[in-house]
Amino acid sequence: MMNKIIINLNKVWGKSSFFNLLKDELAFPDYFGNNWDAADECIRDLCWLDNDTTICFRNAEKLRGRNNLLYDEIILFIKENQEYWETGTANKKIRIVVE
Image (cartoon, rainbow, N blue to C red; front, side, top):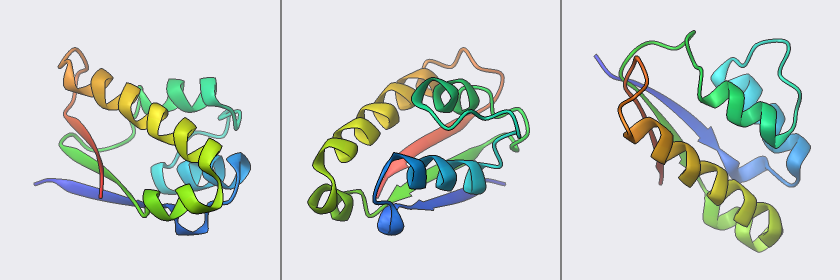
């Protein structure tokens, strides 16, 4: 049975709100450092999530109008981690999509 986690970017205005959203929605561990390197490390682990999980980022286009630089950074973060999970080298099936 597939699990779906929705990450709604509607309320993201800056990096700190994005990192807080990731931490809350993906249940990142307490040691998460609220930066890009820590976000990459945690999203490439996800051992605490069930196998066959889809992480769905929503309303990315709305973010573009508010903070174009952050939008570009988030899209790059998403693409890099989509590629990581699509290689099949991880021990579980995680899909990352943008709706």
